[in-house]
Length: 104
Image (cartoon, rainbow, N blue to C red; front, side, top):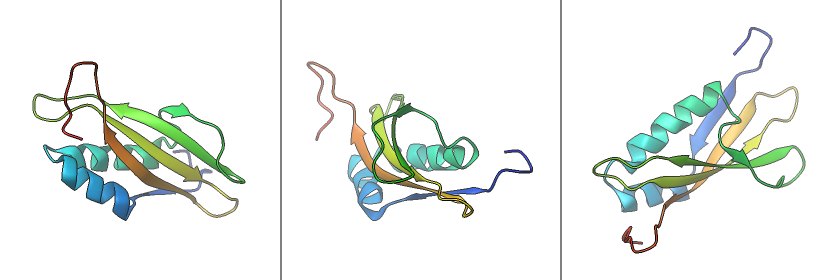
């Protein structure tokens, strides 16, 4: 972040938090690490169609570990000037592969 940029605040919604807890196996820790990274680089991932107004919808993937499945994370980035931007991590889902079982 440069001196001229407003800070960005990222948060995990209650729904995404509950989903991380249901997935378990370190999902919350991985999403929390992503949340911290998004405050530095809010446009990580692939941008989907814009939601409403200045909001931007993104999806990104967190790779699997030995104990946790890969995760797809969807978040909304809302940056109305002059306020600092707000990122809401809204959806966390395990990635399903053909023949695999993520338990969901």
